[in-house]
Image (tube, rainbow, N blue to C red; front, side):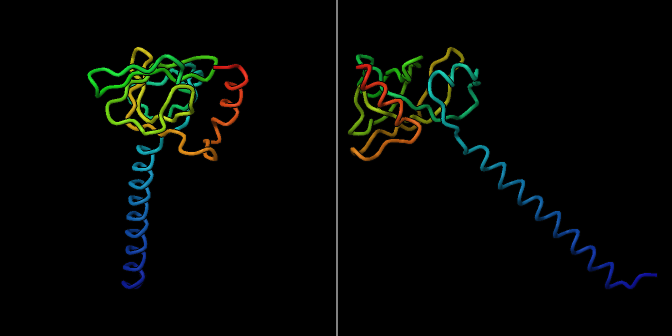
Length: 145
């Protein structure tokens, strides 16, 4: 027969392991919901993302594509030179948001291939460029996009 204190110790260790596993599951599920993967327009279109998938879409604001609707909603296109995606954003744009400049938007794709942005990040000085957009911006400058 095993002593009672040994059984109690094993029970406490088992309960602690279950609680730790539960806490780890909650942390990882919360992180998964908040993670947004970075895509360029051609990658996002090729991936066939569903509307529930939260992503960061980055590229250049296509020239002559920015339109403001009712002074609140802004519609524009983000391009990587190979493909472009229409983006809709409701809210105040960053001061440095302009055509031909790098932009990273965070939001969700729609069923028809458009993008609903919840957040827009624009280039904020001459030294800042997201690593993913650096080569894309250099190519666009050479091509005159």
